[in-house]
Amino acid sequence: MCVVGPDDAGPLIVAYLAQGALTHAEADCGLPTFLCFLWAGQADYLARHIADHDLAGTADHAAKQIGLEDARRQLTREQPGSDGVTAR
Image (tube, rainbow, N blue to C red; front, side):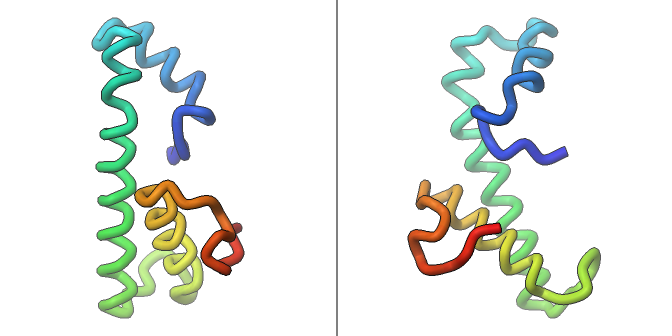
């Protein structure tokens, strides 16, 4: 369900483009913005769950903290581990 980015999404993008909804150029132009939108939504969801102490789907907040850190890193284009946090 979750594809991290264009480098990992080759088969998904090829299948989507085969449907003819967008040209390759349109997808190249729009995908980075769409990924930012998705990561922002993920960050919002996880931050709310952490703030509300909502453990839905996890035994503790550790996995949600990792997910929130992943989202922050994607949104700031930071490399894993550059902030001293061990990436999964």
